[in-house]
Every structure is written in C-alpha cells, then in structure tokens.
Image (cartoon, rainbow, N blue to C red):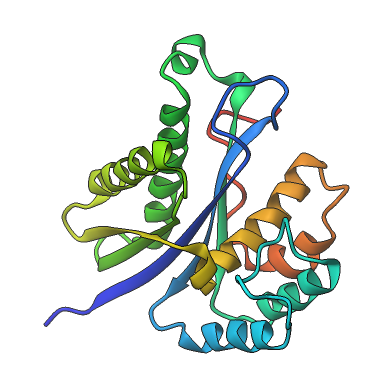
Length: 221
C-alpha cells in the first residue's frame, strides 16, 4: 500500500475582509503547518496552558497579557516541527470590479490564494498527500454558513488526483494548532504593518520557522 504524507494546516485570519479605507490595509490568512504526528508539540501547549492559571479559554495573542504572550511565544520557540506561512492581500490595490463582488469574495479569494500556495509548498508533484485544512469557527450566525461553504468550496478546488484537501472548522478555544497559528500571524502582521519596526516577537520566535516569505498576491502598500 502506498504511503500517504499527512499535513495539518491550522489557519487564522487578521484584518477585515472589506474595502473600508479606515480599516487595516491588508486582509490576511496565516497558517501553522505540521507534518504527520505532532502530539509532542501539543503537549508543550498543554504544559504552557497549565502553567498559566488565567488561561481558561486557550491562548489568544490580541487579548493575552504581556507575561502570557511571552510564555506562549517561548513555547512556540521550543517547537521543532511547525512552519508558518502567510498571505497578505493589499485591499486598496484591488480593482473596482473585484470590490463589487463583495466582502465574502475577498475572504474566499484570500483563502484560495493561501491554500494554493500551501499546496504548492507541500506537494512534491508525485507523492500522495492529505492536507487537513483547519479553520477557526466564526460565531456569527449571519456569516458562519457562508464562511463554512467558502472553506469547503476552496478545499474542493484543490482536492484532486494525488492531493486530498480536507476541510475542518473547529473552535479555536479547544485547538492548540489554531492558537499557535493565531500567535504566529499576530507576530507576522505586526512585522508587516510596522515595516519591521515592531518585529521583536517575529524576529525572536517566528522568522526562523517561516516556511516561505510572506505572500503578497496584490503587492504591498
């Protein structure tokens, strides 16, 4: 029986999928990717969480205290098998006809670009691979179904031949992988938006684990 390589890709988003000139200039997806069994890395997250009495709902970079951030970034820094990837879409560079397609289309197009780039990085062109694409659940009833359908549709477009892309939508509070992706993307976004001025966490804990340079399908602003 032919061996199948298995990848777990945990995705997080940042910015808003809209064209509001007052919002952040990029909408982005970032991912934390593990090949095969990564239970040992999960145990590191459990130990880090157990050491912080205030972390009842998991780690979330935008809300955690400075001490908690330091704790979890050091946890990530000790991981040997995670790789980070990110796709940043420069919203103000979108053509008019693209903007007319609406905000959900921007979400889906960014996800499509990120997934396609991931598959290109992970697949050697001949092996059989299973790519588990794990996206955080959105707890907004008016958007939840649309996002779920978009994730499934994007995965279906890359699920062919020797590549299987399997969609999963999980609660980030209970997924160590999604929390790792959240922290990685938080650091990458600060690095990108500050043009390197706020890159302390990125330089110390994330940069060496980047699987590829940040992808900018629409260029930079």
